Image (cartoon, rainbow, N blue to C red; front, side, top):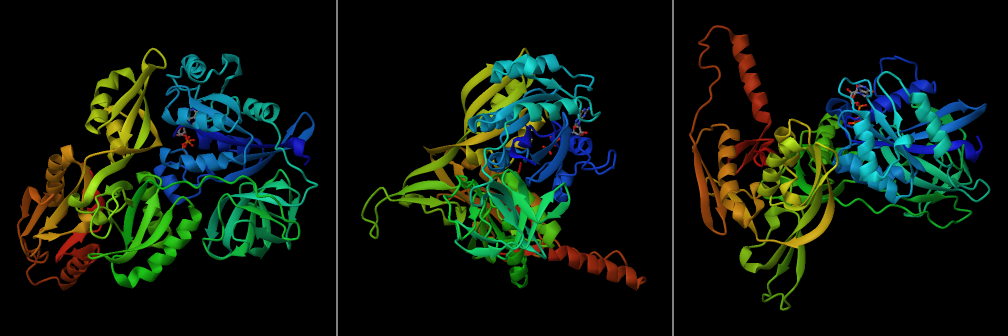
Length: 602
Ligand code: GTP
């Protein structure tokens, strides 16, 4: 297929606005899958994605379509729809020349619509605006059209109206993609050069990489080299994704395809890398800014016998997800483990869920933390003042006597909400130490708010609270906004007088009392009664802020079953033993596996 008949595009949308449904319709319409094949949402491959109904991992599919007598190759690159994953969206967009901007006819423009629009706009991509779900009873496409005009200056006559569910207007979307989005600017005569923009791990074939071929061509059997690692490989397999793998012997410039070349370790497939033919060295293509993890958590095996398995599971998953950073770590109570960096809390949860589902690993996760910047006071080892350190683990937060000034990471949050929830949302933002930047009406009944917020205040349950306050109608997105000076203190937790560093938490001084009280009550709730009484205390700068006791209790599940049925008794004892397995001894107290995260939730 000649280059001028290739289109590379993504669909960008707020969560639930129908991206996967439209992708399915495009696949059906172009004959890639049978209609009503019952396989809904083909592109959402991972089990977690299906369960949570969100796309995490960008996938891609090549479609063929006949238009005005010519065959066109349409490469649809799927993008994740959640705020945590905007760096993945940005990466997927690097292989595209245009996007379909999909907006729900009832919900209208939402926070991620705004964020995604600016990502695409910033990359100079052609934007095809589409209003979806016009079949809904409450659909108001006219209002959404006005929102698109007032926020993005999109002309009403450019906006398509469709129902992805019923298949109305899908043909017009395909034709707009062909008519409006330019073909990729590539050169088939130049030496081979391709952008590696995604990669995942296959148990049998090692790393598989998704590449966009910028110049020349690549054949099975070719030698290729990575600009980043300088390693060379032999191309073992090439495939188009349609959406199942369709093996092919050659890929040419303009195409997107999957390469297998026996990359064994997770570090070899570098997202954003340029690959080329070692006999014709080339200038590297512009890669991506590596996504910067914002939220960190410790991951530890339930017991050290699982250490090796957990390590290999983490390595494989990290290859599937280049946004995760992995460092070896150890903790006095939990032993050897890792400190992982994530884009946000959902990313963390999805990662741990995948560790369980795909690798059967059941690790302990510690409470999430952000990265603080600290300017230290001079001391005898460090004569100069102004030395700066970064700490992303509350356990390593220095004593307050040593800190001159502390800084915390900030974000700019965008919230779009119907105005009747405005009061509740403003209170929530104030409670989270937010400072309002602006409030703009985007139509008669919806407001867009922008807030400066400390990152640590939104990583645990901000999104859930926002949804609760607004009955699910408010949407939220955020971007990173540097560091700000802040009065931070370390809140420690003692169990029977022993400091459990893994439960400690960095908080703003004005909130230490409230949070300390809340954590102690929460722990009283989470920790089951045990053979001994347990005192739970919160301390801050040497002062006890709160205390609760958990009374001793002996749980004998068979007490009620005198003699009699032995099998029943055995079964109950076995169940009790199984229940115990999920507990971890810390300071001679057994804690449920989820304690470290649950303690922070309200
Ligand atoms: P993420 O993968 O989380 O980003 O969501 P998505 O944008 O892919 O949304 P998805 O396609 O999963 O659709 C969300 C819901 O909207 C599903 O229940 C769909 O059945 C429904 N839906 C999608 N398109 C239409 C439509 O045209 N009309 C109606 N009534 N419902 C639709």
